[in-house]
Image (cartoon, rainbow, N blue to C red):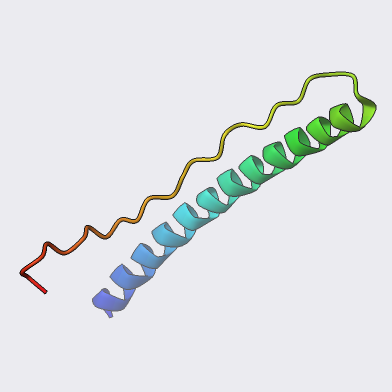
Length: 70
């Protein structure tokens, strides 16, 4: 019985943490959506300069295998 209570308490803590994470993600999504809409309006109106930021290049995380080890 004690083990179940401990598991339930741990689950409650994780659920609370996940709820906080969801709230933070929703806030970030809302902010980026609002900024995107604002940029689209400015671009459509031609009333401002909108510059695209350079996109980061993806790098293959797998190092090459040295010759002789293949």
